[in-house]
Image 1 (cartoon, one colour):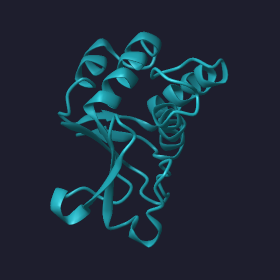
Image 2: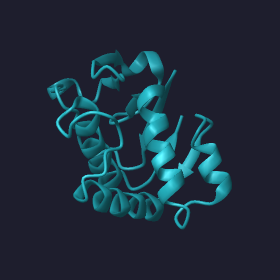
Image 3: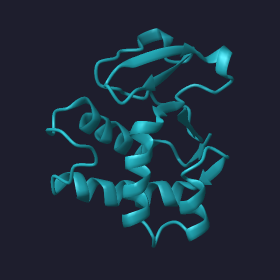
Length: 142
């Protein structure tokens, strides 16, 4: 199972460590797996728009657990609950930017969202999530 973050703003390129989508960025969805492997799926086969950011369940759950623990002032209890499923929760631009600010502070303080050193693929992914949150203008979780 994976979680697809579909951005409102589709005019930026999602950057993922170890993967350069280049000219294919608008035709594929990149999936980041817990082992650090990144795979590409033709966008037409999954029906998602460009710049959809797909994370495996093993990566999404620790991130969303962090959101639940640190962003209670940003999202309602129902929204925090919905983030654990891929049922179309809409996160507004304002909410996304607020989560990004809190995540930036956590990363600056060397908070590790995933086990491993700060150069592990998973922790580099946290930086990519921050980039996504600051550029997406809000997103839906599918």
